[in-house]
Amino acid sequence: MATKYNLKQWAYAATVMAAASSQSAWAEDAHSYAKLQEVTTPHLELDLTVDFEAKQLRGTATYDLVRKSNDATTVHMDTRELTISKAEIWQDNAWQETSFELAEPHETLGQELTVSIGEATDKLRIHYATAPTASGLQWLSPEQTQSGKFPFMFSQSQPIHARSWIPIQDTPALRLTYDATVRTPAGMLAVMSADNSLDPELDGNYSFSMPQPIPPYLIAIAAGELVVKEISDNVAVFAEPYIIDDAAWEWADTPAMITATEEMYGPYRWDRYDLLVLPPSFPFGGMENPRLSFITPTVVSGDRTLINLIAHELAHSWSGNLVTNASWRDLWLNEGFTSYVENRIMESLFGERRAQMELALGYQDLLDNMERLASKDTVLNLELGTRHPDDVFSQVPYVKGQLFLVYLENKFGRETFDNFLRQYFDDFAFQSISTAEFKAYLARHLLAKNPNVVSMEQVNEWIHEPGLPADAPKPTSNAFAEVEKQMQRWLKGGQLTTQEWTTHEWLHFINNLPLDISSVNMRRLDEQFNLTQSKNAEIAHAWLKLAIVKNYEPARDRLRNYLLTIGRNKLVSPLYRELAKTPDNLKWAREVYQQAKPGYHPLTQTVNEALLYPEQ
Image (cartoon, rainbow, N blue to C red; front, side, top):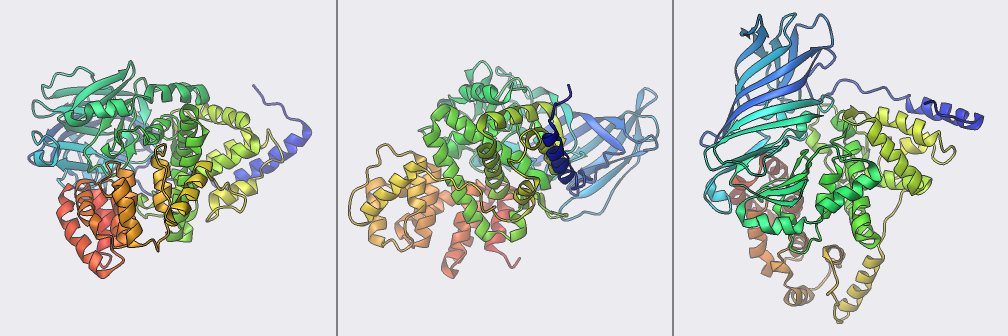
């Protein structure tokens, strides 16, 4: 149905559409060798054996081929450290060996794999094995797991690490479905970002199917001593036995989150939403792998106050998984939208007070982040070149992107903006889009329909200019204002009333204590609230960071243990960064890091070695 405009709206629409289309449409992904304009691979069949002794996945990747160019006779794929033993094409009703070539390794991109496919075949099979050092896999020995009985393996494919365990067109511009067969030692359970059995036989043979098309970075696998506990008819938790009951209790509100999001932004389109608790070495808070989000155990806090991370990974089921950034310079389309939806979920379930605290904390983190970032890295639509896309994962795409949407909501009103977002998720469902495409859509469906509210110049300032616009929202919290009043009384010798405080109030309190706080007051706080031994990983992190700044020695043993037992980058890298500021602390940090390194994910190693060994 055609949209009706009056003459004034037509004039405004013409202006904003011209501005939106001034940026060229998405071109080839600079971080992939794939040539999707020639051949695409819309379906994958994996057949893999998990070899814990060799720290290796071995097997085959079989692809359906769709030729976009009639004269295409090769397919170009991404690999990193893969051993390719054979390539075959389906021809004359049989698999026939074909030629392939692996290019020289590129530091960021890995190796281009070029396979000859002739003129007629529509299927390709690649026989391969991964390296023990694959950047997208972590292998834990039995001694590194809680029970000590079985080893554990898990993947982390985002942003361009899928190529380290699958030969694949590793660009988010591609969407593909997949089936898989996975073999493990008996007694272990394999799971994937697909349909997972809730009553599996631990016989070492598992089959999976992902019928919805996803970008390659959302293909995920894990195997270990796992059990399952259902929360509702479409939500379950997979975890090692030691934490399964605590995690299921912690995340009991997940079904209600799904319902709340559906009411705002349309149906959940992935059938089930299950959660996998990974070992503490998992480098992120969560990873939004569809049907099975991977989650750090550090958010199992015992009080449900860190469930906003679950809301974030769930929100990706609309923003990121359903509508995906076409390249990694468009990451804000995934993470800014998801951070916005996350906060709306939290407000819907837990009220405006809590949502506003979380928004204000995110804003504080953004300001802190932007002080350390180069100006060019505070732009939403980054010019990356072939820099590793891991570099773009700062608070900028998350929180600056979120604030841009808060800005639009404030300008157009919540009802109008919600209707726009819901239509956006519907119109681009199961597609990958660029910033230019989003701007054109925004101009047509929001700016032109509501003229003279926000200009394309203002949109471009948000997306293409560094820092924050002068009229950007500056989130505050009344709850935090009360915390600050208590802090001032306490610094003068008064008492704190913290019985009703959540994690968020504690974080604001600790993060805003004056840096000249006396050692007497540090000890006073610790003795009253036992902050050094806090079981809440976020509160402990904030306190330990302050303890480093203040050389508070009573926290040193806990700091060592914290760094040795947690591999989540958000929690450990700021501590290493702070330790690296003085020679004595740097020496100590390097000693601790060398002990911790075998238990850290390769991504955690890379980030923290850059902090501790910059000369290398």
